[in-house]
Image (tube, rainbow, N blue to C red):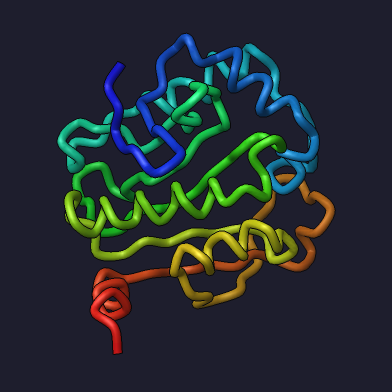
Length: 190
């Protein structure tokens, strides 16, 4: 199987249709889905009809590479969840959205930060990315901390148009950003 990216502990690979059961298990956990939809499980039908096609989408500006990556431990090869590093426009790699959804067993181990940093590095060095953006609910402190540890900075708070309010949505959302210029400045030191 093609490997998109390796880190010290992780392998990021393209999704396949065979990943539907692992995605179902991930999205069946109310704690994992807490800040996505209030903790409701996703049906297998929704995984197959909506989630898998979204995860299999190829982006021409990435040379046909995908924008969603299955995350596995290197050894033993264990599915942890996924990372999103997708261009906001199919034809331009300039601005990408960073995201992640990992199972509870992977929480608190630094995997989200490790994968995010590796994707950011690859984006700025190999993929022509100029700006990385990430959003989450204001109350999602764990995800916000990952964004900060990955080098992104808070740029704004806003209120989204939620189709269905979930606990905490009344506090709005936050957007974090890292530009290539800022990333290069930090890497070169003071």
